[in-house]
Image 1 (tube, one colour):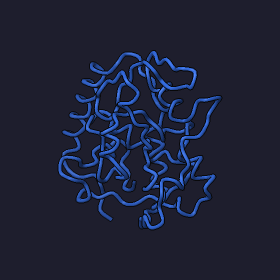
Image 2 (cartoon, one colour):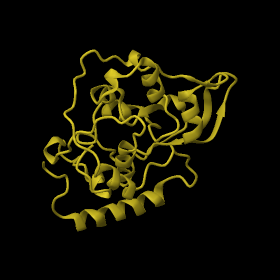
Image 3 (cartoon, one colour):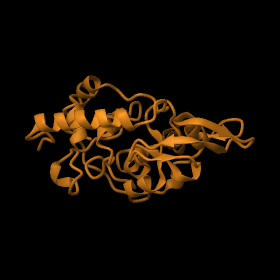
Length: 223
């Protein structure tokens, strides 16, 4: 099976370090975030136990089969809960809708002050989950997955960036903010207890300019 790790690793590591430093200088000082993903070491250990599987079909898929957004508490649903968690100085009205605040989109580095400019991204897209085993789940389990606040599966990001991502996996799409790609890759690996099937990542799957260098963070061969 072709590996995702090839030439110029030293150059890539240096570039990643520079990008990370730039990000630290430019990102907000106090930005909330999803639950931390597993470490690079844990990702390596996990990937070593995984046998890549063939991706399934989208046949029969509908977003309605993954009910969201669920009520979390009172009038607050999952979307509003994530907006509150991921923002700074977020004010909510009596219906729990965010009426003011500031949000930094980790995918593209944009800052927004209106909640309407943000989508809540399913890091592992619902259609991708369907193709990777969720088609056999009960609706209740799919609902739990689509509203999972305990793992790094939901994040508030720029709406059109989320829409451009669609249902693409890391072999075909990565955040434009390169310093976040390692974190994003580890978020994908951290899918326990869902145990979705992993497919092999290949360089030739990635569109120009979006080679999955983030995967270099944990040296695995599957997604």
